[in-house]
Length: 248
Image (cartoon, rainbow, N blue to C red; front, side):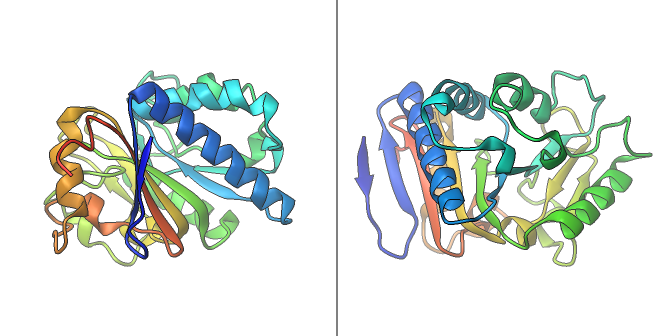
């Protein structure tokens, strides 16, 4: 692993392979959660989906037994979700539940899934319900927000050129015409995602390299590359494998 320290700029960590990347992210998350708990905090985190997230989640299940994290005292949210049936394999929450949440001793009352088609009349109602839940039970700021990045630079379900990028007065928004299937999704807004002490971008693969380079370039418009629009109040870290970092 190599690390570039850019001071107040985002921190960039580059790992040799997707496997090494996933292990490093999981290990860092467990250290951060244990430190927060030892300081008397109940950390609130926002999870993401995607292939590298799935690998991270498997590593969390593997590494948790040797860590000091009490997962029953971690509050779990999602940055976005596919508005589909609750048992759909497209659900980010279902993948996380199967990969690690059910194995590490989380408190179901503190794992806040976004609504499915069984929970809300439509995707707009689902977004409104999740916003209300976050408003009522959130801490006001996430300890850590984890985000994948698409080849087009999208994060959560905030896509280039979409009107959701300019929503400033909502916590969560519906998406009805996602360029990636399924078309209906719920996403946190920039305003909600930016209420985080630490933002982690988790990116693997050469096809993501142009988006990574553009997101980290000075002056990039978030309407073109939404990943450029999120940063942590204390730190922003880009966790990359060698392929994703190949154009930096």
